[in-house]
Length: 535
Image: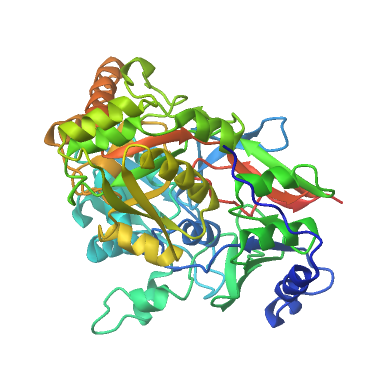
């Protein structure tokens, strides 16, 4: 079965709509004629500019480009038209250099001197880094999770040694420290400016920072017209040099078909969040290229294990047997990708396919439903984000397969902000989205997604045995023990089935043929800094 969605390229009514969408706004027109402008069509609005509170892919992307993270990955040209981040190569960014203690339980960070916040003119100092930790613990936000996971348990473990030097003391070995602190949220902000906007009922200026940026990264927010576009302006004094593009325009185009058409016509330079069918139709379009990058990222369907009927593991196992794995891989991805075969991607370190028992077996699925007390089937709602066309394509295939065992699944598209908010509050009965393998380590992903109470445990799932495995993975440096723990990790999650692991996906993005410099990051964020237009 192949889902078809034709690209409307010759219908006059559509062209009129697209023409309206493509019309430059006042902010865009403010760019000088000789400036380099990159226009990106996005599916929805940027949700927040406050990094610790972003659970959204687009907000994370903007914050990655506006704030200067502690560290970044190195990268290398693949020879296939793009570069790949090398997670084994850690480079300094806001932090220029560092020294570990002999016992590995502390690290001294040397902050890059002379760096200026472009919006305030103040210099980045150790005080801003201390404030970052204070704000993380004070807001109990996503940044606190990163600090705690790195075993920096409290502000007492953060020492200012000088204007440009900071020491972090760990309560246990921290094998994931660099991975955690190259995250888009791990970046200094102008502490003095943030504190100037604190209020009696908002000590950490969360309301103001949701709409205002005070980072030291490659770009700043020049203009934001919510629901229409956000315009970023290059930081001319960025420590690694001024970006090629003077302006980056993020233009909201809700329809993926319209985003594809605008790209085809050259009205935008990059179109994000296109369906696989639209990408297929663009592969041969003049002036357009589609980059297809292998990744470890998985599409998963998560169950709310605190709601009936998904509080029953047999039901979750039954639906694992009802997934049309090959139809998804071949019908949607044209064979580009892999059946996931478990909670560690096939190309991830320590994956073991021999542990994976599931295949498409509707008789087995029906038998398990009967054993669980649902022999007549049941109804449930699957929520997906309206900016995720590939998830919708996969959901349609799942819907058809589930119906064959008496399970009626309603697909409910939600605005991306609503979808993300309800993930955090466990309001979904079931949901589907990509699980991004930021770090090729099952312990890291387990601590983020599957540990009891984890920041992204959107399934409400809890298993004390798995928690113990994840905790040991977070602290062990013994590779043999790590492999043993990974076996236990996979076995527990496969048996408990808190989610369906459907497909390891390639990441594909469409852009104009003259856009060069693309670097694939493990979290699929688009990094604007290395991009340029071939001339």
